[in-house]
Length: 295
Image (cartoon, rainbow, N blue to C red; front, side, top):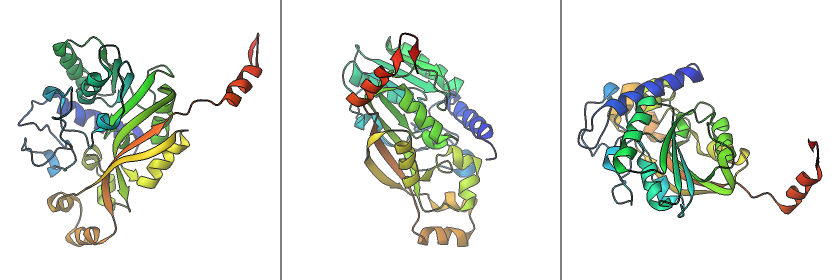
C-alpha cells in the first residue's frame, strides 16, 4: 500500500462488501479472517486465513452479528462490570458490542465505532432487532475518534488496530477516551520476525489481517508510549498460513524459507490501563490554575 488513505479505502471497500453479503454457513467473504473449518463462499484471491475464534459459548452472542472477522475474544478478557461504559473500536456488525452488553447490562452503555457505512447500517439493524436502547453505533476513524475524552470504563477491539495506518495515533485516541483507571482489552495480529515482502505489501493480505501487522515488541511499545500501564498479554496463539495461501504470494523457495525461519504470525489479546493521576499531579494542576485559567 502506498498511502494511509489508500489503505483505509481498501479496508473500507472490502469490509463494506463483507457487510453487504449474506451469511453462508457462518462465514462471510471476500477475504474475511474466517476459520477454514467453516465452509463459505469462494474467497476472492484465495485468502481464507485461520484466525477467527468461536463466540457461540459467550453470553450475549448474536449469530447475525458474527461475520467471522476477528482473531480473538477480547470481551471474554475485558473484565466488564455492570454499569460500565464500553467502546468497541472497529465494531463491524456489532458482535463484540452485544457480548459486552450482556456484561454491562441495562444500566451500562455500549458504543461501537466503525469507518465502514454498510457495517454501521448492519449493526444498527441488529441492535434494533434486539431491542437494545443502550447500544449505539457511530461512524468514525480510530485515528480521530468522534467521542469525548474520559468517556469509557473499558475499550475493546478485535483484529482492527493492525489495519490502522497510524497505530500510535490510534492508541493515543484510545487513551484519550478512557477514564482514568479505565482499561482496554484488544485482540490483534502481531509478528515475530519479518514477513516476506510479498505478504507485507499485498492489499488483499492487508485486509486479511496480516500485512498490517507489526512486530509484537513494537506493538507493546506503542501501547506503553501512549501512556498506558499494567500492560499484559492475556492470550497468545500462533496463526498458521496454509501453503496454498503462501503460494499465492511467494515462490516455492520463499515458502520453504518462510517455514524454516524463526518467523510467525500470532494472535494476541493485550490488556492495559490508563493510570489514575497521582495526588502530586492533581495538586500541581490545581496550583497552576487561577481565576483566569491554567498557565
